[in-house]
Length: 253
Image (cartoon, rainbow, N blue to C red):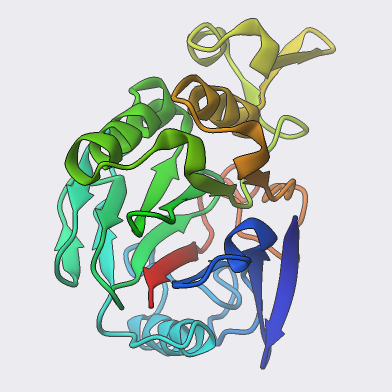
């Protein structure tokens, strides 16, 4: 189950599945509580989309303050909708990376989204965390499988005890796709309405996680649609590309 936590004017969503674990801190951000102006109003956390940089930096200060973390010490990837995973041992920006993984303490792993699904993975015995930017292209390319494989091969993680939280993303209610996309997914994650196909990307993510040995009871889906909830979330699809970015963050304490 996901819960909304109000910190000053910000709204941070948290998974109760991860909140029940010691040694991990996480949050899925919303668009509420920042200083940016329209169309990035208000908590835009993306620097490369046309917003005033000073506003973005202020928003990041507010976001990391809400997460009780240093705004200068995070790790992020330059997201390219690929399947590359970076093992992180220091803060910084990593080129062409859509998933980050670490065993280091106090290095928040950051994912930026505006419809794609942010996914957090946590293996409590080995204390390994991962943050995955899971758009449809990355999912098709196997980013989830690659991340779990690295967790297992490099850190002796056990898939059956990995905890997973799937954050706010565009959902099948709003995610109309053409045949070039729908043909890449199994029929049970495609919904048909009025002769149009709609992709259920969180369900596609869940099925792939289960195929890798993750238990269904260890998967927590937010059930929140970014496109439906304009007051809460940015949506690239709904806003025709002119919009801000939310952040998801996770770190070991």
